[in-house]
Image (cartoon, rainbow, N blue to C red):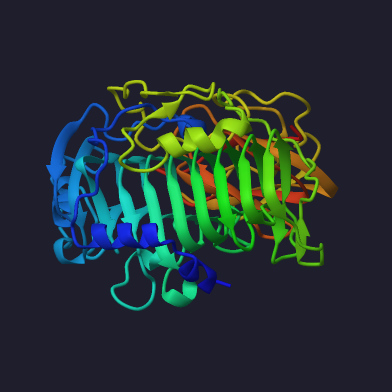
Length: 520
């Protein structure tokens, strides 16, 4: 299946790949510094501004990018790195420092925050070199090309992903980039835009993904369900075999994208994922929406899409196409404001705006193109924002009945003078504590109960003590979501008889006064 991509590379695409690879500057509008403001889910959870308000530096090598990160006062000091030229293995070395954690042969944005990387001047090309975002937050990547990153053969970089995110990543905006390969897995390539292991609040906008076996995924396996809240808009997917994207759990908003030549499948919603699919244009493609290659169903809400010469396969146990007449099988609430272009004009708008070197132009929401608005000048108030996956613009006190009242409770340990039941008694003056800084507390019912929201409330005098945590389905062991800090936690509605709040990091001994649960 993956060889189709290599065979279908057009002569024009091949010529462009050769020209860029030897350092020829292709004709393109003059690239500009970071501009515009984040859109989609990247606007939630405190927002995404990257290095706004910090120092701006110029880099023409990968080593210089790493040196800029390592030269900051701290790992969270805002910085904008303007990149021009070709970044490759030969000019990308590891740089050490207290404010960075880099590696050779990959652009490493690891254990850092508040960073913008933007292509300027004649453009920035990351040639066979991937961008790896790990344990990081508030990252902007704009106006760059990443091409031919391999996971096998030579040279290899970033596991074969053009841009890959994993391990507690929060708030990333990738905008006006071009991500491309020259084949599929059998040719040594993997995904163009991958997210796994607890990555949340990401937007991919005005970008081109092409000539790859795999467009991208959310979740590395059916058990990696800690990712979500991803927006994809005004992107062009072209000559992709599958994963446009693949969603395992979580929530995605997919709108105003142009899909051309999806060879095997497109949006693959599975393992409980929920996708809102609005006003996209699907062209000359196969099985552009559904659940594929698994019996673990996913869900979608569809409206306003155009299906132009799209074919659909016959349904089977592991193959459930949404077509030929796609209908919604769920509803998805979107917490941010957005304006939809008509699907009929999406091919034109996307062709004029998507990808690196397009002058960072955007749609005005009425099928016309305009310059973006200015970049914010200050970073978010918190460099490691607390996840608040909520259908509103910020955390709000849940409404409805607290299902914990009258339920049971248990935990991994308890401090002297406290009991498990104190987390479900409605009394904020009583609390549960683990024996140390970590531990788990559960609420349980005699029969399956639908839950979609939890409110963890700390006792007076201990606010802010709880650090990293994960919320676990006590029936299956699956991670419902994870994050940092107490407060309101929202996740896809799940039927279970036990839900566990597992504290994996804290600044002292946590005191959980109430573990409230709600159906909505």
